Image (tube, rainbow, N blue to C red; front, side):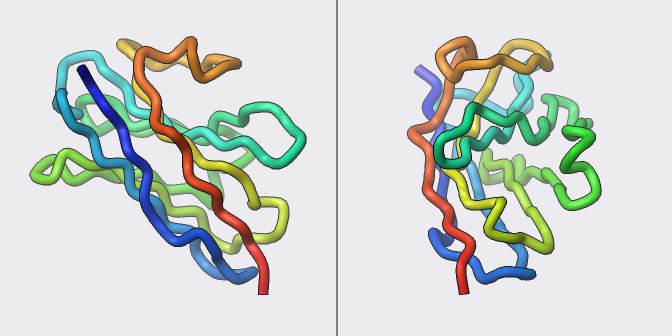
Amino acid sequence: QVQLQESGPGLVKPSQTLSLTCTVSGGSITTRHYAWSWIRQPPGKGLEWMGVIAYDGSTYYSPSLKSRTSISRDTSKNQFSLQLISVTSEDTAVYYCAADRTIVVHTTLDEYDYWGQGTQVTVSS
């Protein structure tokens, strides 16, 4: 059973960089065709897909966040990471990592094959 676990600071100051890591167990992030996404849910709003890194290392980003978002991976640790620069209070959200057998954007977490429990990130001085 594949399990995903998000980790990172729960509080980030405005204008700084938000950095989160997703540790994957029970499966490899290089498994053919699998895609590993970052998704967030601001308070009172729906899910927002941020971007994805595929099994081959290729990345794709939401157009609205592309200029501020970077997704990378460490295959030796079976982890993939999110960096979001120049954060504001609008970036306060619960951040999730998720996986699916293809690059796809779902509207709910349970449509993904696997997903983490989420981690709250608050942007505040």
